[in-house]
Length: 196
Image (cartoon, rainbow, N blue to C red; front, side, top):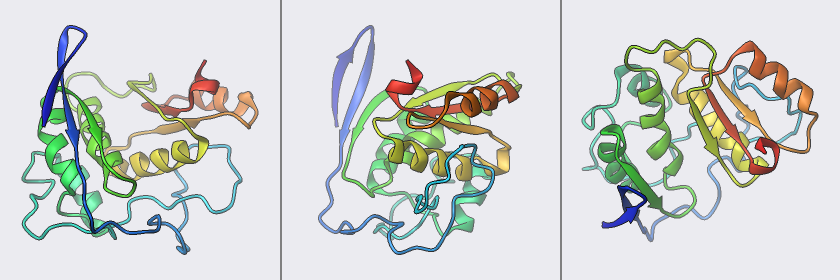
């Protein structure tokens, strides 16, 4: 782990490499669907299903519960077969749950979304501030496909907490996305072009 200066705060830079990674995306060949509570105006076929537990994980990796993740999130993850953390999650969760800034780098399919998403969900649903439909967090992703995947994963991970996640991306009319924002969301996942 390397520590670098990032503005006025320190950010931890974490790089994880594994040689036993799957060669296909976890959702390829799957017949699972995005949960119905994912807010998107998409009618695109072949969207990735959320939260799949088919990437390799060490038997001695800590569990999400052991790292201090809320029981509501742990139960959701356990229900789909995710109990132990992947390497990137093992490194990032303690830092992110403590509120530290970090930069994580790992290959596709190694658990980065939950590595930042679980602490994000935990932070916005813990404390005195109630979820009133005002967005509490923004996740910026480079592509529409990644936007939909991250939205599905965060919606599923926060399901037992009632968190509302909205995907905002280009190539679709503005109106449905603006209407969804007006109804209230807790977390927005979007692409730069549409967000600007």
